[in-house]
Image 1 (cartoon, rainbow, N blue to C red):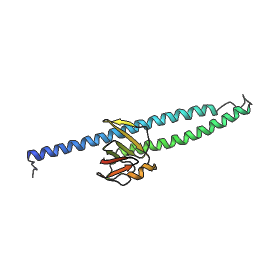
Image 2 (tube, rainbow, N blue to C red):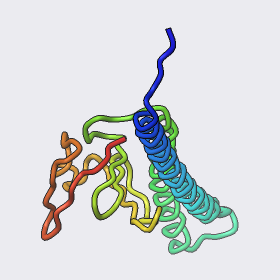
Image 3 (spheres, helix red, strand yellow):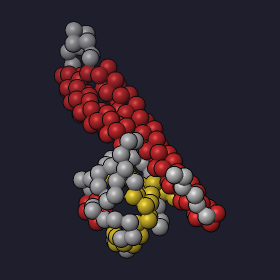
Image 4 (cartoon, rainbow, N blue to C red):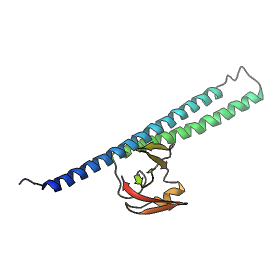
Length: 171
């Protein structure tokens, strides 16, 4: 049997369908922008690793100054630190790529949240950017701010410091 809608019900259905589609597009846009920002972080870390690698690969035969050896050791330590940070950044990128296929009903790691004031992303931290005239703020699920949002649902209010946020949408 064929389902028929009265004209006004059909109109409401189509409006709801468009709203859902726009929300999904907004979520995807936010995740794509987070991915782009994370890729910038990775490129910067790769450059730092390469700079410190060059500095630490000094020709030991051509210098005998203890200060040069000290600099070489410091450069090697920094190279290792940046390599560790790079590994973590690449894991974060992989996490973001996987989030494209997930949606959330409560606030948890990987959630994209729209509040009355801004958008939030739980999972990684990148510099703040704007989408549709609202700031997108991202933070780690290890950050203290996450505790205020963890497990909240649409319609809940969260107070962080002097600011209060109403959760409007969770993806």
